[in-house]
Amino acid sequence: MAPLRGAGWAPAHAAPGSTTAPRWEPQPLTYQELQSERTEVPVSRLLEETALGRPGSKDSGCGELVWVGEPVVFGRAESIAGKYGVWMKDPEPVPPFTRETTWRVDAVGTEVRQLFQYEAAEQLARGYPAKVHILPQPLESTGAVVYRGGLFFQPRRSRTVARYDLRGEAVTVEREIPGAGYHGQYPYSWGGYTDIDLAVDETGLWVIYSTEKARGAIVLSKLDPETLEIRRTWETNIRKRGVANSFVICGTLYTVSSYSAHNATVNFAYNTATSTSRALSIPFENRFRYLSMVDYNPAERQLFAWDSFNMVTYPVRLSQA
Image (cartoon, rainbow, N blue to C red; front, side, top):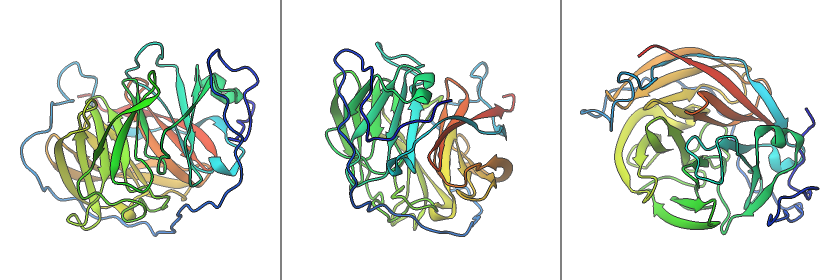
């Protein structure tokens, strides 16, 4: 596949009405990277009751994660702006977008505003976006997701989550996550200001973060995708700085042990339906040794990840419910 081009180029064949990306100019890259040893902290049961819905019910197709396959590379960013980033598809798209429409953000820099739109992953691999959206405010790090026609992201230097409407090209709602750490207070082990991480699964929209009250442990909240109101919150005893990343499948939070070890593992699972947890050791390959983003796509049943300039996917296998 042809390599991806960075943010400092203009598409040769843009779609009608598209916006040409302004040339990326070098700037002070005030991003944060940490070196952290792998730390595994047992998770204890902290909440009772059941989660919103039971994704493991009959005919849901849900189950527990039991296997992660080898990464498949879709493309590579060449500019330093793409050392880490986020790429994704909408599992529940709104017309004119489809499940094949692919979205990408190169996340290095102090004013990250460009959201690249591709008609399909194959177009992303060739490096020519159909359109470039210029966000009204810069986003922070690699925690964004696309869901039901909106880009959900954390505006820079805030504990706020915002929804950018992809059709209307405007922010339609913003809401503060009470007490959430931001801009380096409670990041994942690799740093990168990954304090607030959004996720999507079969049950909806989630936000992963920590607070002073939780003393740096992962807090998981279910969000209303229209209003961004918090529906319910779970606290775990997984130290957020002690894991490299996390994602949600079928209402269960999974964490990755290391961002740089070639043979990492998915090392913990926290089930929101039972408020219980268990340690895991599912092999997870960091082929390029710098994992900055992992998200699950429930429509494709695979993980999307960004590993040192490379956009990759991982096949997964779930147990029978």
